[in-house]
Image 1: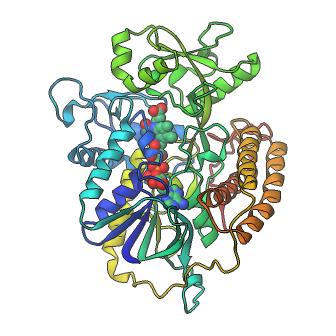
Image 2: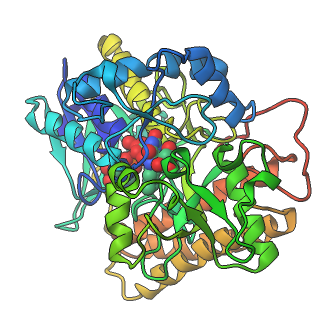
Length: 529
Ligand code: FAD
Ligand code: SIN
């Protein structure tokens, strides 16, 4: 079926793009699994925007560049940060019920919380479940829009390009996607004049991650295979405070807990330890706090460290963090009187598909926005709560560019159907599970918070072996979502390791014992297909 524009992904970036596009053209939004399965619905802390009288764009820009260790593109940082207040206004208009400081409602009254690396209070939020409120408001608006068709349960396999035209052109022009209908098991070509990838990050490449199950780097891998460049994939962000619990493996404890006074304590010594690592203490940028926790855990042979906010009044804690409070209480931890056991876990993919300020990728007809991209905003380490913001700004920028150049977008030519003539149903699903587990383990152990060339090379060696096995399987058997994800997970792991091996310095999130210093000039790691 042909639409004007296809948006892959129904998170903050995808739905923002769709709502803007729908002002003038018809849009198909597809998502694997449910429409709320991306990271957006899971976001806790909030959205960064300069809204306080004492704050300035210059401050937010400086904080973003300091966290990003100078690898950010300054024009992009300015572009995004200056558009933040408008983005918040649009969300308020869509009905997002941001917390206010008093009973009087209104944008001037928004409650601003604080997170690591921010020199001011500037995070707007809906309690400690901001993402869910944002996802719900965007989805309500998209469902109500006559120009938007929403299709969950569609797992994209590959981009449709000139190579798939019935009259083969071999051009890199992108005409849509081949997607597996997860209910029927059939693969369909969805074509359009333009395609926007908003497929989120690749966090699930790591054994411990705060990201949802579907964060397998699909968009990044598809764009790469179709010929687009990717950048800075070695810059994987680890959140310092994921709950340590043997049953619940990926529950985030928002940075706002530290922003509102939470302290990190070594459970062996009973002492606050951040003063040894950084003068900003618990509110240093994430890479520094995560490395400090990792170092305490390794030095003292601990399983976790403690995050303690029990010195604050119980009413204040329950009022600010109702979701976390309830969740922990269900696990037998009362955070108003007890410390919370925490460990670092993968949290955010800073690198991705290279885009310009209009969300254009290298491939004609293909745009991208949100966590799957390398826009230049985050540099070597994302400043907390800047990523939802990036989704709103780039989702809109990509859509506006498509609309402004609409006459230049040809309708898609006839496209060959997906070829299943040489595959059969799999009788060896165990290979998929085994390979998923293996990749996630060696990525955690060899390509984690602290790296060495030797460990990266070991990871590369395993990736090369697995490539043969996975491609062989892919060539023989009918696709399933698990297989699509495994293939993309492996591709993402490869891009991360190759980028990490190419960076001969330590900067931001990439810390290697073999090159502990930062080079004089900050340079992107850009991989060419
Ligand atoms: P997502 O919201 O992840 O959506 C991806 C979409 O793509 C989904 O609809 C998915 O189904 C679809 N998709 C993926 N692959 C395919 C495929 N092959 N075929 C079809 N569809 C596909 N950021 C902040 O700024 N503030 C916060 O407070 C914050 N808290 C966070 C808390 C947690 C626990 C996590 C995990 C992240 C948090 N982040 C936060 C980061 C932020 O949530 C994400 O960066 C952001 O939501 C990404 O949005 P997105 O639209 O790019 O992708
Ligand atoms: C958090 O709430 O700590 C997450 C914020 C973010 O990832 O930006």
